[in-house]
Image (cartoon, rainbow, N blue to C red; front, side, top):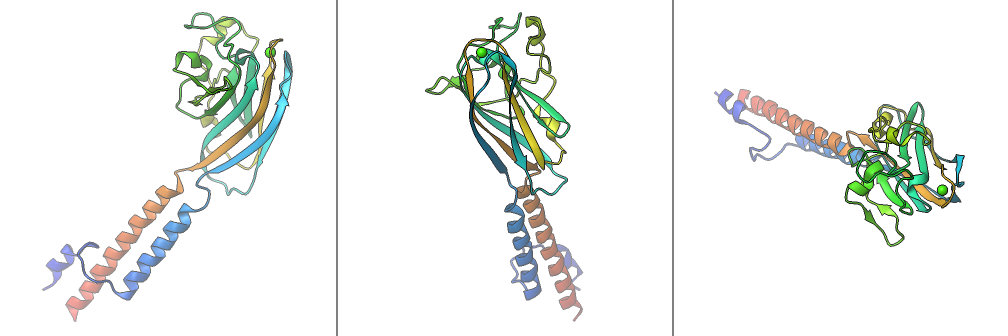
Length: 251
Ligand SMILES: [Ca+2]
């Protein structure tokens, strides 16, 4: 007699819940809240405040050590660099971690045929920028509505330079797009050393690496996992209601 009612019962039907149903919801909400807490994003920063040797390919290294992550994460990686002074077109920088190697800067503005390119690259002094996947190529930042702070540093979010070529390559070599990007770190174990390297490859005008930071975010973000768990919880409630209703119907 109640079969047709079974098919109409949903979690939103407005009936009061039984004690087991409330327990299911409370447990699911607890799982959701726990899932949103850890590792939503982790930020690691180093204050360096060291001059980058001028006209010297040896450059300088700095290391951030990451620990405490459980494996299996796809990662969204963002980097911030704070470089003051100097001549931006002199700079070559990259980051390595595990087998990943990503060129961050490679003589910005140096090129032959691209609009605005020069032999010595851009003459701006300093960068306080974030590198993230999907932005404009930092190599041609002057062609992409740049903004600068009061110290003359380039600001904003940019995609990495990515040109995996010697910073002493011919001008024409820099007109081609880069081949490395931050996706190189997806699926890698974030634990271990992340090493950043800076060199100033042209004599005259010296820059200083003030600091840098690394932001790691698991993908998908835990909030999406939480939403998935909430959906499962709603499904459980619906199932409990249908079973309860059948029981009532058979008594
Ligand atoms: Ca220089």
